[in-house]
Image (cartoon, rainbow, N blue to C red; front, side, top):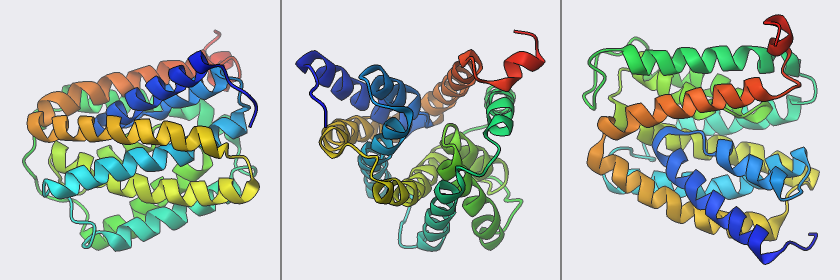
Length: 261
């Protein structure tokens, strides 16, 4: 690992805490942590790999907090978690073969659509509604697909899980958030395993950021349990829109050419 200034290490620690806090409530923590790693001088692939390591701490912390409050039971969801893990692992293996331009062009549009859904959909609260897919159908179709996407590309995976749980599984917003963190934790493990084998993870920085993200995620999850949909909905909308605009700001995004920017 190359030497980093104390101020840079402090910046990464603060970014990890903030990422854990935001991610535990609405997803999108990578919107904070990955740019921080890039700013510190890590290459894109090193940033993604190290982010997967520190993200494990945050998603595990949030999952534990939600499980302790009774919002999710990992023992009943282990099959879905395993499918999310394998989906992400396959996605990470296939990352070099997927047409990245298609994902980069489509993702901002999809994220804005998700933001509009949560912003405008009436009666979105912490009460469960009628499910449109059975637990078996949901676990064997959408879970591995979103896990695969998380391994291939990553940004917005938590938002996709949230949308699926609310719109198709019939979960209330808080319950959907809790289950999203569990499946995100599983998909992070799958992606992390591939990046670790590839040798692109900076372990010391990853563990340091992970400890800070663990604390941030615990604070965020406890706050989400206390406040519920009144906190989760607006933050989810803000994160989706911010991530969409960040992706559009990338000069490499082909959508900029299509819309003449």
